[in-house]
Amino acid sequence: MADFSTTIPQATRFIDPQTLVRIASLELVARTVVEGFISGLHRSPHLGFSVNFAEYRTYNPGDDIRKIDWKVYGRTDRLFVKEYEGETNTGIQLILDCSRSMDYENSGIRKLEYGQFLAASLGYFAFKQRDAVGFVSFDDDIIDYVPARSSIGHLNTVLHAIDRARPGKRTDFYKTLAKVSERLRRRGIVVVISDLLDDPDSVMRGLRHLAYRGNDVIVFQILDPVELRFDFPDAARFVDMETGAEMHVIPDYLRREYIKIIRGQISEYEKECRKDRMDFALVETSSPLDKALFNYLVRREQLY
Image 1 (tube, rainbow, N blue to C red):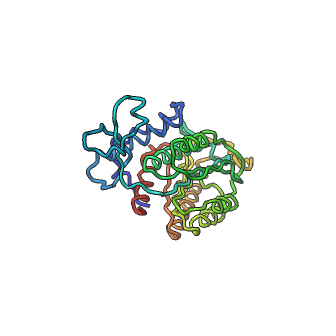
Image 2 (image 1 turned 90 degrees about the horizontal axis):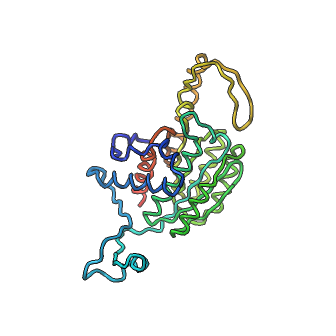
Image 3 (image 1 turned 120 degrees about the vertical axis):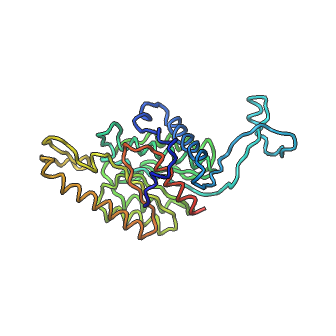
């Protein structure tokens, strides 16, 4: 995947995940992230995206009265016209890994929390684009399943499902994603949010199950910065969050080999996803969410 960090509008860089943790409402988090992102896009003259979101403007004589929002009129006693272009019937299915390993944090925000923020922001963003939004949470099986629809009431259902996601059991990518793919009645965009800390063969078989049914798959691998750099200063006891296995290590001795292995695995995921025309993006939990949103928008613009 290309590095979009130089093309993302700098106005959106304030979207700091540790700041978002202090916001109680997941809906408010999503709105904060997405509206800041949209504002940044609208300020940039260089991106060239047709980001045509539903908006309201004051009614002017001569406007089509069919576009007047009478519900808003009932609340405000003022006439507003709905304005939007490029309405689509795209279905966006958000799939969030809720396995135990997603409960890890060493940078102020758990991977699962970050994944929830990302899923909620993508859902809200898709809704603003008039896309249908659905949600799935899973560990070794499907936990929550919300089919894709496109109404404000349904968006709230999706956000509530994301909000109640909690760390569960071990991951079983292949079995679970095969079940999810069977439930998806229409082709669309499928966004998988996970640390991908499972057997790589099982991960790729599960992702291919989604892709081979005609879906456009976007994979966000969420990792804590410590998981990438292994910058622990002292000897420590490490516990596998999914199996409970323990290991005592001296980080200085292990760091080089660990980094080689984790980087090799990430590179392999990227290569295999590209081979099967799936998008792959590595996201650190210390990174603002705008980069992930930008990757999603690039993919959506290519498709539609």
